[in-house]
Image 1: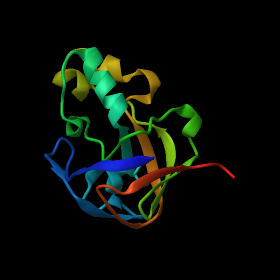
Image 2: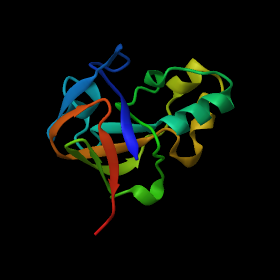
Image 3: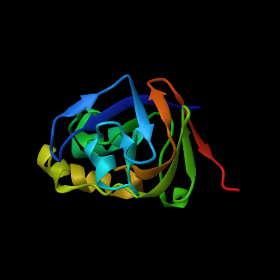
Image 4: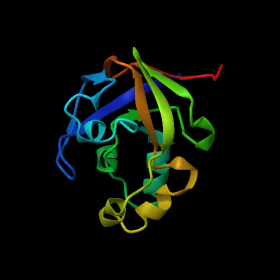
Length: 149
């Protein structure tokens, strides 16, 4: 069973990352006080797989904190791929819908040469989601991928 093991936000593009133990997620703007959710209501929340991040870092030859990816939620025991577009992910009481891949940006290359390329296969950059149901989440919440009906 997958668990939420990290929560992070940033209030401005390229702004400092703040980590949280718990946070409110709204349908209108994603994670509270997060630049990303307010900017794009269709792609409000980013999910990152711990295994995928570790694999990309290993391939690039440098271990980096997951927050350098600038994703919102870090999940263990779950990977993401194109077949999941349109699927719903429940994190605690919050319901998300996967809308697309989170493409690696040039910032990843600036962190470590080769990291952007290492994040390209297998959705290692994570998944972007829109919020379907608001609520509060906290570290340790279970994360469920819901089957399509």
